[in-house]
Image (tube, rainbow, N blue to C red):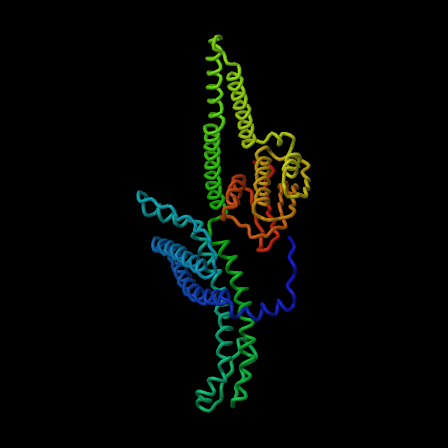
Length: 443
């Protein structure tokens, strides 16, 4: 969905407000704390690694070298934990922690050392700490823009309170590595510090944001679980979701059968029993009563058939037998909100994918009808160049839709995840809303 570009006035306001934003100060604090920790930690890590490799190469102290190397891996993991916690607290960046290295007490010393040395996650943490070293220095330099900007802004106040100190004038600092810092010798000269400080503070938030962005990418690449471990974790989660979904479906089927069709069939059997009893004695036969009993049995049989048909449709809609395009046309025709439908799916996905696509569209259109206040909706289904099936369901309603607020979107996200799909929601307050579902062609 395209968004309008901000106006020049909006950009100027954004630049002027940046130094006062909570995000900017949090990022500056993050760079300051992690810069100091990262610098000290990287130096200690380099010392441990240098000593460890040196002793290993000397052969005489090989065991000590291995112990020092393992200690370096442990230090790198500890620094990674600190980094993840600081990122979560100050940036809101939550990176899943990798699994701890497996260790067995029944193994010998050399076996345990070998297992730790083969810990790929530990070496990825070492790579992060070493890569973080130059980034820490750049981050501390970015923090310097904040500090120097604030100091220069206070130059007139400091002159008024303390004068020029030893008579050598007052130095106005600049964060630039070259160009020199001017010295002023009267109060009027200190006023130059105001624009200098203002420029520094206006540049500082964007400089720190750029460094934080680089650090975020570095953390995501090296501090989280590896791609294989993350894939295993995702598969474990989606398997659990699939099992829970199937159990919930079975419980719903059992409940619907018990509370619906079964009750109707019991009533039907009782009604037919009563008809049989009345027909057994022709002398007291009451045709009107028998007719009422037969009508009641017929009604129960009809309603039981309807409930069984609805139950079967909830498990697998028969309309899908004719293809996803026909099924979506049926959903659009039944909607009380006008729906503009576009379907471009040359090759049919697997039945499981078609079923998920159908139920996602049905649930999202239901949300549009019940909650959005929309006057029209759009549904599009198309096969992308990589074979992915993309569904886009939008409306011109009030917006504000999000997962976890009782809209059923959380359940849809979980159902889509079971087949490695994704569901994204774009629904700003005031609308419009657009939900994008990407599904693989096969499940």
